[in-house]
Image 1: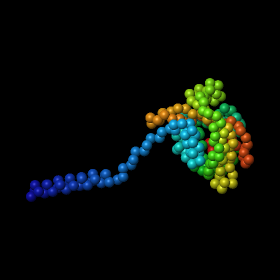
Image 2: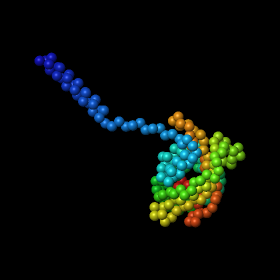
Image 3: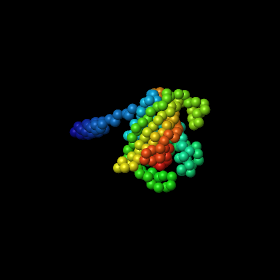
Image 4: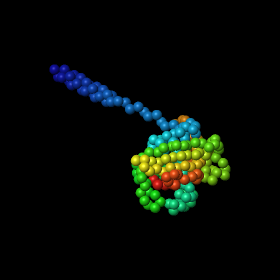
Length: 216
């Protein structure tokens, strides 16, 4: 009897352990996410960049920026905010200001007044004005970078929720990209943005630099 009782206890314990083990496998198995890989052409890079702006997707926008990314500010923007002429925004600042913008935070102008949150962004034009070339030795901003650049003409509109107010940017910019290898894939990331004055908006006198400064 004692032997039978011992066997019953052992069988019961084995059954409980088996059920417990099965229970651990009952939950769904989370798939391993695919690693992010860079755009394999400059055209794909700029398409991803404009899509991230329109969708206000900070994750995708930040992925497209190289760790050494910088945005060169126009002298007019520096003077309005009383920053040293030649000030640049680094990658962290550029990402942070867009995170503020995309999350619906109000901005602040150079006089300290609040400006409307951005509810939507429209890219009317983002067009290359020439082919991509190697960065030149006398480039005013990124001469020491081993990469390429191209001039673009852009028209961006930043609307408030009621679409009653907008900042419209009409500008020429130089975009800079460098080759990278991420997750075994060769591609490109943006390393620089150098805005050049083009014209005034019908509703606001704004450069891309100025709009960025509002939400920094």
